[in-house]
Length: 593
Image 1 (cartoon, rainbow, N blue to C red):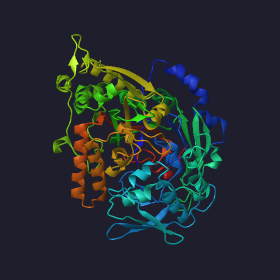
Image 2: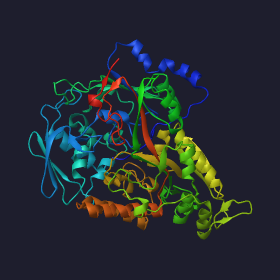
Image 3: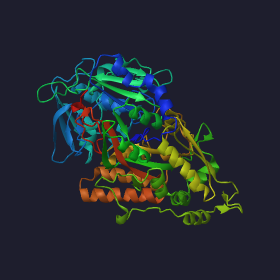
Image 4: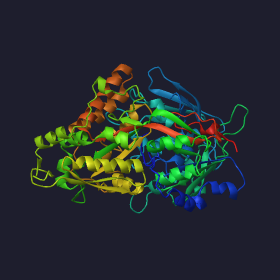
């Protein structure tokens, strides 16, 4: 499933204050743990921002901790992309591919020791993912057909659960098996009880203030401590199902610590000073880190183009909430002009962005579907692209009714100067650099940009709750090579339809929201793509979605970085890929001291 990317590839820029900052951080460095506690196998990772929640269903952010705490019936091999058994030991698919029967492993347990059963699976789907009062990306993805119906999920016996789709649905196995299974014995009351405001208790359950022992998981790790702005500590789940060929419980690493570092600068500083075991490598500091590889006893892995997107988006929502427009009507008229967005795309110098900010370690990005996907449409196959051409940008703007003052300032037909606020998440130096360049690039065509990096959780709140934003630089990650993973982005009612977000359950309604014809068409094509089992026809459908996305540009894609990560050599068994990352096989990694 696609999530908002907060830390992205975790790139940063060092400052001249490295030594001073490193000394100041020494007291809170993870290396401090190794001298203060009994030695146990431990891996130390990092994240830029504090989590917004520990509820994996309501979370809209890429959250490392949640990925370690929960899993589904099946998993994905990080090298091949093949689906493999997880909570389910096997599955059978009917000839028409509309019925899947999973057989659970024997003796499964939750982290609190309670049995994990077929009843938990049925509860998870029927009471949570299919619940109209619980917004979730999972629910978006598994809606089937034009009517958006859910598959039926029924218990066959104590070990078998069956999913039946009312019509062909190509990604049924991946989604039915891949979504996290949740504990009925803990959550059942929360999905049937409402608070004084009429919202299900589940929506506020397992927040960051919840005592860790109350959060029950089924993945390789369980939460044991959360210290805001400092760290998340996870410990091996003693009831996790996986064992090696000798019958020894996995994972082998007892503790997983996530340092909350606040910025990519601090993240890289902590890695270089020995406090972290893994870090994404910044393109602009690749040469420096490469020189330190032997001395620092780590290895840099390269996985090709990252499975992620980075884009500039304008708020196209023309609606009102409580009588107040979500976007200034003057600016909304600009943003909703196709020619305006195309002009912006022509005005951004992505090659200079690659050369200066990415140090050449990246390539222009033009599609919402990853390059590794068999459904990716290349420019040679007809994907529209927007080369850097500021003169063409000016021509498009003038043809759309904009005009220039003698001083070169762009105005609309009513004489309003074209000026808007661009936000991104503070602490991500790559995005901050991209924003600064976009501000300069657009100034060349007479547009004033007020660039404001803000805290990631504040940004997420603006995008999903208040909707009071004008333009942002952000990205999506997750979903792998299956294009239907983007349905929660491209469906007009999707929970991540970020450029024209609808009201979610529990929020005040939006009056006057407009869905454009092209916008509705892309959503319809995603439905058709999910129904098509013929791969040639399915590829043609997703090719049309990419053409429409590039023609109308709700997202102006920017740069696809090369996936680079540095991992301490004390971590053994790493099999890095852009698809799975460095930790996809965490259960079999070992730590040598």
